[in-house]
Length: 466
Ligand code: PA5
Image (cartoon, rainbow, N blue to C red; front, side, top):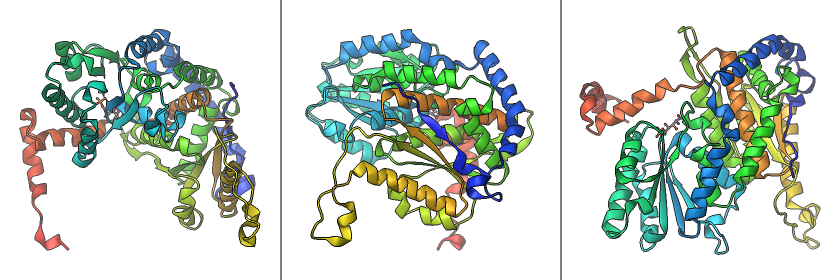
């Protein structure tokens, strides 16, 4: 099935939520000339080789390398552990949640390895996984993903598992249990991989972590766990055709960005993504990073201090109806809500009979899919009554093809939004200071000056301690 995802925006317009909080179509029309310029700019950047993420779905050699490697490794491993953080982890998690069963790791009939993505350095969390792996290390494969190899979280995890493998499997070759996904030319992980003769996969040059899910970074774990990466890439390619027109209303990525930008200018700087499908929940984390790290910037493209950026927020339907919707309806009208919904679910359940419980008879024998989709519509209706603008991305089904479309649409929407905001979408300078401060606190010899600067912050001022 190759049906397209759709983007519905009527409920963000003044005709739905009123003129004070909805967009007048004229406001969108005003953005049309700028959107046309950006469309050309993005096409030129792509043609000039400075927007390589746009071409990832066409890199057939990359998909072939993944197939070759998975063919070699599949069946040999009970566990695949991804070590990475940020853009090196969130795409892996999102694909697995979207496209494999929620109980995939627990199923005995599963034909791929169990997948664990370790994107933190919490010793309890990692320690408990390592305990679980005792006795199964010979059937465990680690994929260390880091473009730089410098990231303290991933580097420390790597050092822990390297030591563990050496101690527990002294006869084994490390290269049989670790693969590295990293820069093709440079970086600490590249050096390590060369020294240990590890099999390597590529973080493509010029592609930031948050735009890398359709490269080896996201494709390998997906393919190992039997996700159809060809269909994922086909979905992305088909979306590529849909995000080429310069006409705003014919280009869902440009339209999404233009609407978000128009609301941002009107003071609605909180952007909630709320899926009504458990499978889509981690795509919201992926989107949260993409939107936040790309668009939250101190300076514009001319170097002026601007401190801009919408705040992406993740909520889950229906769970957060009972947690967040009170605020979304009656709190400050400073949000735009993007619902994700699916027309069909991979499976359905029928709610049990309730002949003897008149209060619950209305639910009796109905489909659970009808309930969750009704709750989405009910929540949207309730928000509209409170003049809260709503958007919907509708999936005909949740499949590799539709998820590929979604990923590509939101990547390109981020490029449009960055240009509308006049900032550099692809850097993340503000993340650096925290990374370097961590190096300093951990005793890195190159950062002793920094450690002196941090020292005063160690001291607790009792005057302000409650
Ligand atoms: O999107 C990004 O560029 C970041 O989130 C990185 O992916 C993250 O900081 C991890 O970096 P690295 O891959 O170098 O370990």
